[in-house]
Image 1 (cartoon, rainbow, N blue to C red):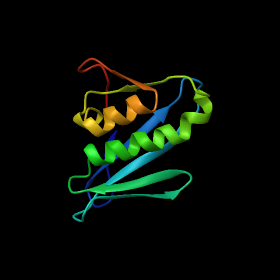
Image 2: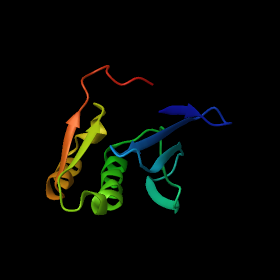
Image 3: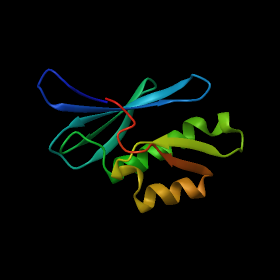
Image 4: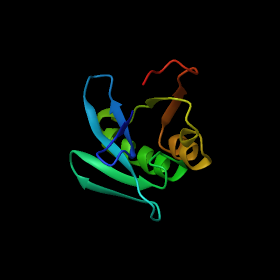
Length: 116
């Protein structure tokens, strides 16, 4: 979901909802003209920043790693199923390798199926 802050800059929020209705803390991505860095700032959310305020391959890889850490106990050794949209940050080699190595199956929504 994209929204603007008070400075009229893009903000991207990556939200995850589990099939049991629980959520994991969202990732909020701000537009900042610095070197990309992602940090956890609170148990309620994580913050990242990128030049355009959008996710990219690095943020996507860090996000799937965090997703795995927050859902591995719930999965209890079973395969995770992660539904994603078609954004290229979900299809980098690092993202897909991490998913394969950690028993996470990726399923992509067909184009134009998700709404903003």
